[in-house]
Picture 1 (cartoon, helix red, strand yellow):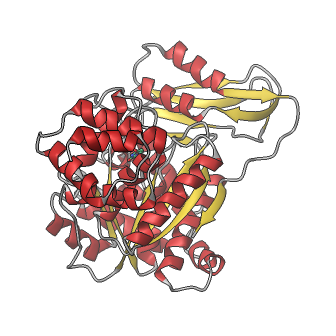
Picture 2 (cartoon, helix red, strand yellow):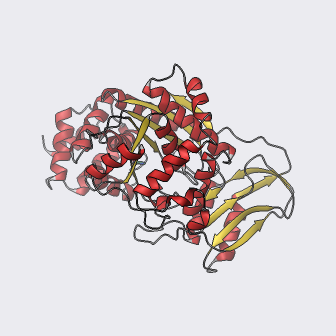
Picture 3 (cartoon, protein in one colour):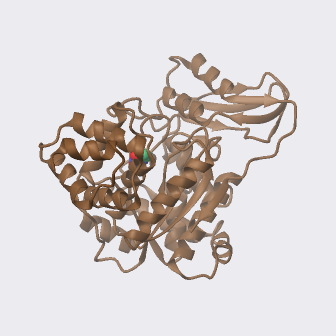
Amino acid sequence: MRPVDIIDKKRNNKALSKEEISRFFQEYLHGGVTDYQVAAFLMAICFNGMSNEEIFALTSEMIASGETIKFDDVEAFLIDKHSTGGVGDKTSIAIAPLIACLGMATAKLSGRGLGHTGGTIDKFEAIEGFQFAKNETDLNALINQTGIGIAGAAKNIVPLDKKLYALRDVTATVQSIPLIASSIMSKKLAIHADGIILDVKVGSGAFMKDTETAKELSKTMLQLAKDFERKMIVVLSNMDQPLGFSVGNSLELIEAIETLKGNGPKDFTELVIHLVATALFIKGDTNSIEEATDKVKALIGTEEPLEHLRKFIKESGGNEKLVDDYTLLPVAEKTIEVVSTVDGYVHKIVADQIGNAAMELGAGRKTKTDQVDHSVGIILHKKVGDKIEKGDGLATLYFNSDHQLEDVMDMVKDAYTILEEEISAPKVILETII
Ligand code: URA
């Protein structure tokens, strides 16, 4: 069957066989199918969807396009926690040391931030001298030594996804459940962790804007995990406002450490505890997530997770003393406060606007090649549900350059909706799907 016949079949909503999907993408990888043919095929998928069998075939093809990581030299139960991305999302930093305390280890490839969401890699790179494991052998050794295996994305994991994602980005074909599910899951399945915890963010600052679509995506991804015989739990969590108070690399690292010490923001602490509890539950050590939650809570505020984090930082070339002395981290010295001009209650904080404001200060990248300033960012003082009086600080900006500072201050102020009526703080964990 010619590529055009495969496209035609999908356009007419007829089921494609595993062989047809495989041949189409194999030929694409080897130059026999063009970008414009793939774009047409992707658009047909956007309109007609895919059956579970077709999604499985596409995901298998994605995984087979590159290398996989098996962690043969590691004995610990490995957890890959993945978040679909949001503003102020520093969960990986706080979760990994807790997972290590519970006799498990983290096995995770992280990315750099682009646009309004930050990446875990950038946050650790705020630490002077810090270097991620360069190859699989180093990563295995790091996991065995510290229980924390966070590394930068390896080059050749799911190269087909890189090609497809670049094309989807410019052909309005990103928003398709089968395409998103196979893109995310192929990258998770290529890394052989024992348990996958997916934190699917929902809300204005997230990729998934509403709970219904997020649930549909989650179910599709859970079906894939089942088809590939892998253990996975999905947590839907709120991204209608930034997570925690801090946005920006050093500031988020500090907030994650403070959370381990028991001084973290309420929403962030709750999410961290829940995600670690689901990891312990998936391992099979407890009968329920509630039972696991008690075990995780008992670790917050103790030396144990901090010791794992110190070890991870030290083994990665950084100064572990920063866990107890934040002056060892770059934090911008110039600060300015954005204040409220009205009395009332915070009803809304548009998360991506805060993310974009932090990016304007230099905390994130507008394009892939931009340099990040790890020292800048924003600390929010008020979250949804908080009472506020005229003149109270909404947020403090940490900056190095005055360029466009007024505009950034306006962006932060405008991100807040303050109304007279009282409102309660939103739930951070919306649903856990097993
Ligand atoms: N994240 C991914 O990795 N892939 C998508 O398609 C969407 C979000």
